[in-house]
Image 1: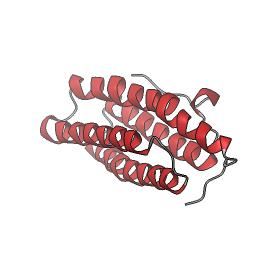
Image 2 (image 1 turned 90 degrees about the vertical axis):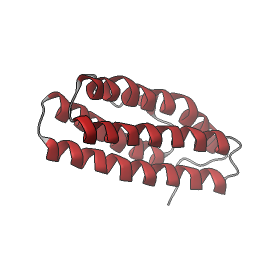
Image 3 (image 1 turned 180 degrees about the vertical axis):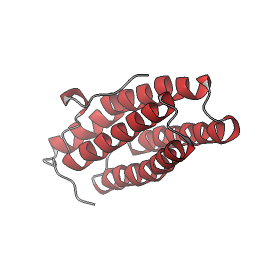
Image 4 (image 1 turned 30 degrees about the vertical axis):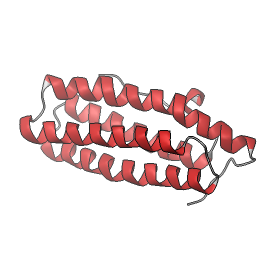
Length: 141
């Protein structure tokens, strides 16, 4: 399975957002590793549960930041966030129904990891540039 390594190309230039992205990437890597090594249901369920809770937290923090700074791409970002959360929920549903399958492995490997990287490098980079242009590199929530 693929593993995402954090590098400067993933940085959006806003400390809080970057730290949250690092955590999301680490947990997705943990999930990939747990599935690959079939570490047992407990580890996989725990990681999936964390991902659901953390993505809600992370997306809420980003959206709050966008609203506070009148970010023009807020509506688009919300749609993207909802798509990711729906995909993550589908992944959990698939796991609960079928357990570890090749489809689950492929979903984590291809969709979630690639989606997150493309989302960070695309949509989130635009937010980072917007905030940096306005002098914000550290956002508190």
